[in-house]
Length: 111
Image 1 (cartoon, helix red, strand yellow):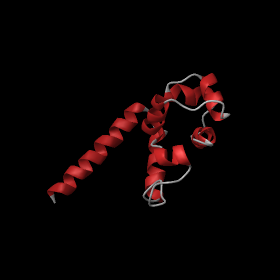
Image 2: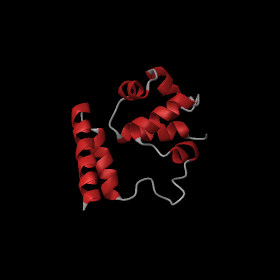
Image 3: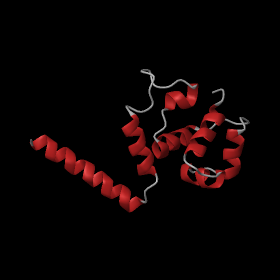
Image 4: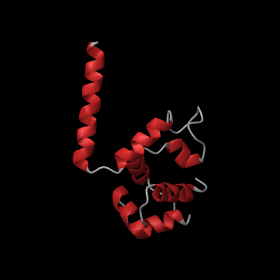
């Protein structure tokens, strides 16, 4: 798990969050996050699952530093842009986006 703390710090920075904000989103204390980012401790399995759920992190990349087997984290730039934009929305807007996607999929399946 070498450098996992650095990769977690990168996720936090990519999302423009301070340690307190980021720690809250993944259910740990700021002090615990600080220790993880400095490489003093490794994250728990619960923290890894939370990172996966909250930030759609590729766990292979997070644990090993290697991206997905095919070399990508996202399918394409538009998927990355969509996910990053989605993460910045409030809960109501996220729900609305999910409904739109489901509607589009239903409409396509009837064509």
